[in-house]
Length: 283
Ligand code: GUN
Image (cartoon, rainbow, N blue to C red; front, side, top):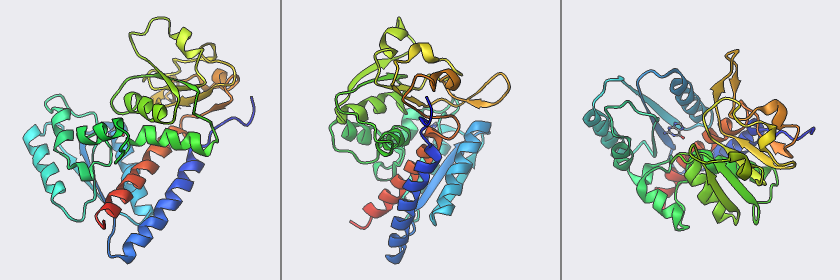
């Protein structure tokens, strides 16, 4: 199919333009939204992600700090750092890049972030509020996917959304957000038998498996909307998603590319959440 590619870069630009305006308004009140990003270790992919996050902050006139900690840092040290950021008035949003090294209990770190500064939307209090329909900060990747669907005029109500992946960062919250928009939601995961049976029924298919080109056209119903959350390297070391884009785009009515699909939206929604956190301090 032609002209069916969802341009995440362009939609992210539209979202960040709106954020930029809100940042300007906050500055007239003497508030500059501030984001702290904490990176532990030197995972190359994580370094790229966090650099993109702080660079985008600067482009939008926001304040940002990047705190880099050694791979061997203790949990206590990291928790101390989070406490300092919780108490820092210049910081409205805190993001600790995941995954963390094995010596650190991720859940403990997430729970230590002030729910008011939890711009990832990972704190149990914010997850709970999302579940009962009182959203605070929505997790950036699923929130970004919802925006992509909205900007691409995809109807969600009554549609069958199939999500492959059940992580706390993407899969689980994605299902909740689509459910809130009145989709019928099916979760698939690594133990799902006969994956085809489910994916072939999807009107909206969200793929977050973490395996290069795992889902090809044979898994996709004609006319489905396909959202690819993956970020992998193929056999030529080229960036690619979890979906085999070349075959899938022939059957999907709409599809996100990798790169240039979901990735830019995750960052855009982080900017929106940080701006919201700063606005909340005026209330
Ligand atoms: N690692 C991969 N995606 C994310 C994200 O959205 N937030 C954080 N903190 N870590 C991640």
